[in-house]
Length: 295
Image (tube, rainbow, N blue to C red; front, side, top):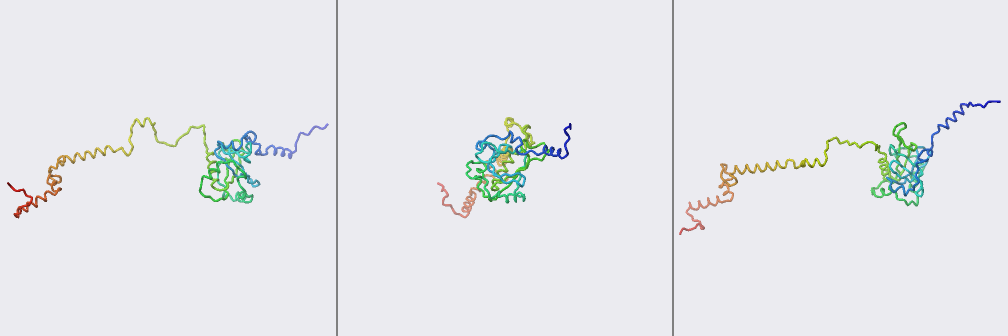
């Protein structure tokens, strides 16, 4: 009786190995097995950080641009096929991703032109759900060209400690109707992907020594503009007192300079000139009409 052949040919082993090392598809990730939430778009957008319609494609050239309704909460970017969906259809973990413009990539732009990404509407017809992207775009009254704008989400490099948590790390491309909406979406995604470690204490870069408000009030420091105000007032008072002593205390007493004497005071009033005119009239034998007569 022949024993069963337990050996396998090299081709068979290679086939088994290739099947075992096959890359996982998008639906094999934890986002599809246990991460998708059973929540409608209307419910998800109540407390969302940002939301709106965009066209999405992966980094392969064989895919097409498909309109999706995106809802951003923290680093969790979920999307729906329509506003009537009852649960999330897809999920992107954007942890430590880079948000970069892709409108200058020739190959991506050519692909968008050939597939009609700019000619077909981003928002499906009969859509009634109001998104944050539409609201903010309507508030901004600045005019922008209505040409399609493309940007991308780039995951961290493989092997780094900062990696995607629960979705497949791949480059995602997004297209919006104009650059205005593109800037709004990029700003929201950049804010969500800021590298923060909530387990570490917050450290400030300010190096100057500080004191508490209560201690500062006890020190009773004055503002810089009023620091020398008292010294200036005291100096003015000293100058005034020195001037009174040199000028006879302000009584007009002659002090040798003749600047503030009684005579100078008469000259200021014009009385000395009147006296000189009367003396000249008396020398010429003229008697002034207003001179009082003796009894």
